[in-house]
Image (cartoon, rainbow, N blue to C red):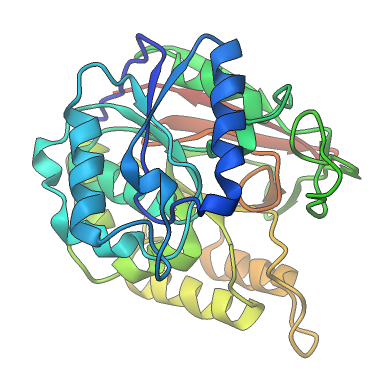
Length: 335
């Protein structure tokens, strides 16, 4: 059984469980605060958000305490970190997972590691999507803005998202856009071995999820048995920094660890970290994986480090379809 947090108010807790924001970029937080205020939200910034030292916002124990406190603060309706980072892994053994209540936390990249473990450990749904600083613009793009609709979905209800019209090829920090992103390239979802799949969504940033394999924080089989009644998983992955051979090695390790024993498909977000290595491409990896697992592989979806982003709910029942390069994702908040 999956439990779904309910978004009942607009008070956002902002903490940095991975990287904080250095002083030179504090303006990003102030801009986000202004934008969220226009949408009727108030932001509660925790101390870790404003600091960054030695690849982390604060010592692991401090970050864990701060995040736990926000989860237990009844005045905080949801939690949105400023962005990802590289060392959220340090928090996993410092969180009392069994005590955490059901509350939405939204993010991607390194933050997705917490979301993944939170859902596996508790059976509470979690939300993979845009981070705070990418929502600081004068407007929100049509795809990323759906995070609010998705998190406002109630138990038993269904929410539909469509693929974006365009995606951002590269950042142009010196050329501000009203919606932060520079959406210039036509979006095209692609597929191998089938154009649709249905299952329980689960996934995140593959770079960091791999470190839970074989640990108490990555027991997918137990989660599937305890919380999904052995329903199949529809996996999704974003790739931040892995080159193509590293991606293949990681997917093989996941298969050998049993993560793909009962799956109906695998979704991959767009990535700019996957140039060919000696002619070996990400598309080669996807084709090999499809042959190995005999399930649909759908790739270049709106997920991860090449925005914009869908909001994907770990634990939700989902159906995805691709037709003529366009995609539809239907999520139902089912027990």
